[in-house]
Amino acid sequence: MIKKLARSIREYKKPTIITILFMTFEAIIETIIPFITANLVNQIKEGLDVDKIVWTGVLLIGMAIVSLLCAAIAGVNAAKASTGFGKNLRKDMFDQIQKFSFENIDKFSNASLVTRLTVDVAYVRMSFMMIIRTAVRSPLMFCFSIIMSFIMGGMLAVSYVVVVPILVIGLLWVAKKAMPAFRRVFKKYDTLNESIEENVRGMRVVKGFSKEEYEKQKFADASDDIMKDFTKAERIVAFNQPLMNICMYINMVAVLVIGAMLSVKYGGTKIDVGHISSMLVYSMQLLMSLMMLSMIYVMLTMSAESAKRICEVLDEEPGLKNPETPVYEVKDGSIDFKGVSFKYSKKAEVNALSDVDLHIDSGMTVGILGGTGSSKTTLVQLIPRLYDVTEGELFVGGINVKDYDIESLRDAVSMVLQKNLLFSGTINENLRWGNINATQEEIIEACKLAQADEFISTFPNGYETHIEQGGTNVSGGQKQRLCIARALLKKPKILILDDSTSAVDMKTDALIREGFKKYIPETTKIIIAQRVSSVMDADLILVLDNGRIVNAGTHEELLRDSIIYKEVYEQQTNGGDDNE
Image (tube, rainbow, N blue to C red; front, top):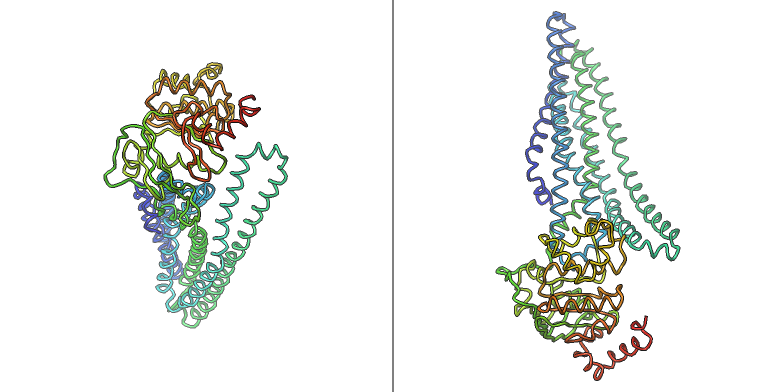
């Protein structure tokens, strides 16, 4: 896990090494200063010249300044290294997530991935900063202080050997008790973020049903739950400092009492005032070092779970991979399903799609009808390989989709999803998601084809009109038409409209379909719709039911042969959608 996380240091190795070196220099200087001070006290007692006292004072001031500079340089580089490490770690995780299939994303959930990219990375970044700075200085200070204590105080320093094991046992006990609580906290963070995400996305529904108080209480309960676990964990961790203080203050009292007795007994020949004073300083340094180590220990205990969750993302194998020798060019928009069955999970008992056999010639217009849950969307998601078929084979342009380079295949397929999404930015910026190199003339042509140019022209800033996040400042029908225009700019071999004209009126819907016939005759067009009028002029209409193609044919053929199609058509033409 450490090795995997360490890969994200990369170009920040230099500031990391500089931090470690200068923290080492500072620790050495800080442990030498009490030694010089102790000798100075003993020499003053014996009648040292004033000149030597002054020069020793100048030396001590110089060492203090150098120590300060080392700490400052280490601090600046530690900040640079830790923030850079955090940036790289987020980027590595985000890059990995971009490789995920829908199956991978479903495994983690959106809320969990957001928590891992934000909260978990923040904890690991802070731990990294403490490791290269405090976790270098404190152990060195601890070791150097013990060594200097034995040099200055002899056997008087043996008391440290008794104190340290007690502290280590105490810290291990704290970690064992606190870690389960921290694990629960991070899982509950996922639930909390999921609740926030649902609330924000469904704000109109919340307000429409006057459920604000219910949502506030739901959020408060989730927050209280996290608070209780954090309180329990922090209550356990709080034992660190009292335990440490008791051990170290007992040790300091022992140094004072035993040191004074030895000084009196031997008349200062084995241990003197200067030695005792240095022992007290080293005791304080030990105390501060152990305090810092306990803070690091707590931070590492908290971030260990975060590091594990981050590595789960980095270690996740993408569900879809390129073949060893991929095909980079899609010849045409022909599609063949051969005995295709599909289920979303290996554990699922029932297939979402079963025994699909279908041939679509390049340039055809295919309509798909079916009730809710009939797997219409599932069928078309297999074409750009958003999921892989569970059984059978799927061919596009005469080649198995698994043999294509994934990016090349998806570039040849444009999908306008059921849930249309626009990003914050101008209309032009949103449309160029379809083709970053599209000229303004191409953008306008695509918008005319999607019946979007007319309403764009009414905006004061036209194509430079700013779209709010999620497209909240345009209507549902306008959003759909912009998404269709964006898809057309890819100049795809296959265009899939997943119920993406449901928010436009029938006249506009008809104009869009007429434009497709005229301007993109060679593109295969697949239209999922609820309205029969949206697909009745298609070359082929599929009727899905429970994941199976139960009927296929033209409008006239289905009216004659398909009971489901005939019922839907009669319902809609006898006071249904067509008359609204």
